[in-house]
Length: 258
Image (cartoon, rainbow, N blue to C red; front, side, top):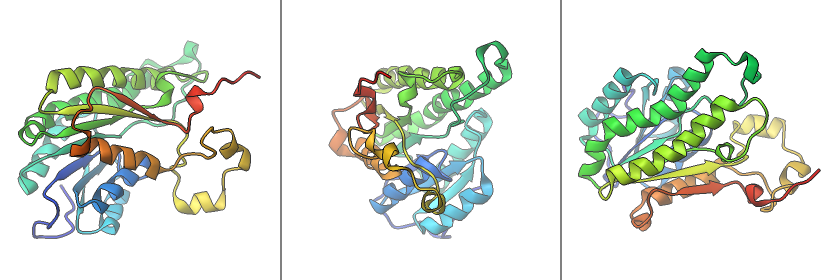
C-alpha cells in the first residue's frame, strides 16, 4: 500500500509523476527536483523502509509504493493505487534497475542472472509503459527512460547490463512511435554520476584526477540528470520524442589511447 504523507489531496500544479527506483541515487534526485517544481511525485522502489523514509523527508508532495517493476501484477496494482488517489498520471520516469554493471565472465554467466537483469532493466520499463499508457495519453504525458552510456561502450564482463540498456534505447524509440503523438518518450543516458549518499561523498571524496579526466571538468551529479529529465517532461520539450540524451561530461566523445 502507498504510504501517504497527508490524508487530504495535496495542492500542487496538478501534475502527477511516477518515478521508479526512487529510494536513492538518481531516482531520488529526480523525485526531489520534480517536487521542487510543484509536481506530486509517487516514488517506487523495492526498499520499502528507505522508500517510505525518503518520501516523508521530501514532504507533502511525495508518497511511496513498494514495487518490483519486473512483476506485472505489482506494476498493475501500483498504477491502480496512483489512479485511485490522484485520478491521473502525467509522467513516468523509469529509473529502477539492477545497477551493478558487472557479471561473471561470459563462460560462467548464469542464465538466471541474465534473465533477472533484463527483466528489471528492460522488462520493467515496458510493463510500466503498458499500464500507464492509457492515463498518460489522456493528459498528453511523457515518459523518460534512464539508460546508460554503457549501451554504447563497455568494460569486460558486463554483458547483461549493457544488453539491457541497449535494449532500453531501442524500446524508447519504439514506444515513441507507438504512443505518439499524445505521449512523448525519450531516454537519458548518464555517464559517471556520483549518486552516493552525501555522507559517503564527504567521507570518501572523489579525486582530482576523477574530475579532471572529464571534458566538463568534473564528475556528474544527480542534479545534472534530474534537470534534464524535468525539462523532457515539461511542455517546453513538446517537439522532442524518440531521442537519447547523453549526460556524461563529454567522456563518450573523448578519444583515449593508453
